Each structure stands twice: as C-alpha cells, then as structure tokens.
Length: 194
Picture 1 (spheres, rainbow, N blue to C red):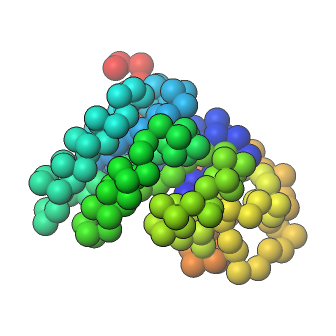
Picture 2 (picture 1 turned 30 degrees about the vertical axis):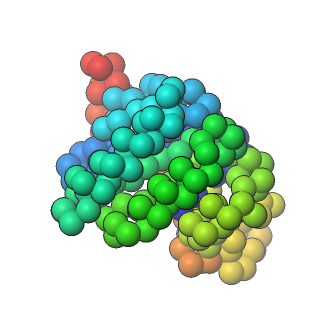
C-alpha cells in the first residue's frame, strides 16, 4: 500500500493519526523506518522506530515477523518513509526477503510513505511492482488528479479540488473517496508526555 502526496511532509498529520489509532487498537504492531530522518517525533506512536542501522534492524524485523507474528492474533504494519533511500541503502535481496516473508503472513503488510516524485521512480522496480497494488492507497491533500502513482478508475473535476493536508483521497480497487483527516484525541498530550 502507498500513502503519497506532493511532499512527504504533507503526510505527517495522517501518519501520526494512523499510528496512534493502531497503537490504541492493541493488536497492531507498528514499525516505522524513517529513511529521511524527519519523523522522529512520531516515535512515541510506534512500537519500533528506526533511523539508522537499517539493514540490521530489517533482519530483526524479518525474524520477528516469522517467529512472533505468524499464526497469532497480532498484525504487523511496517511503514517505510523515504522509499528512494530505502532502495539505495538496503540490498535488493533483503528487500525481496522482507516482501516474501510478509506475503506468507496474512496479518502483515508494508505501507510505503513518500512524495509522488520519489514513488513514481519506484513503479518499475521489481520489488515494488510485485508488492504494491497501485489501485489501493491514500493520497494526502491536493494534486490527486495530476499524479500517476495511484490509479483511479476515473478522474473527474472533483479530483482537481484544491485541498489542505487534512483531507485525503482513499483509493480502493480504483475507486476513490474523499475523507477529512481527524487528529485522534490525546495525540498532542501523548507526545508532550513522552
């Protein structure tokens, strides 16, 4: 799955809210790989956060998924921000190993979070095209009508609306729906106490 926008920073409010919801659910384990090192403030909302030693950390996440997540009631969601750096810093065989491992575990997934320009460069990469379904994802803010990373069945005038970053387009099997992003109660308080 993909969460995209014209700029990566536009995804912050949505990512923070989503991580907070997952944390409160109790059975969703979240991992945030912050390859651009700009989301450290979201660390309190994740179970695991990584902004260095990526390859070693990825090995531990693969092992964790295989031994602790498979055949349990827990869900594992891995967020990867900075997809271009992910591709450059992690060996492709390691990326394939992660994708193959998670494909075998139905209660696990990867969400790639980045700006549209960096995601567009990845579309033809085998590890990306084998794992990401471009008709499912989330677009934050304006510009959904001009982008080509997420595919809609039809583009209409409504897709060209000028929107703030607290609005998002949900793509599901090519159908789109506009939603308002709401910050979860307690997000600001939680962040201030950690």
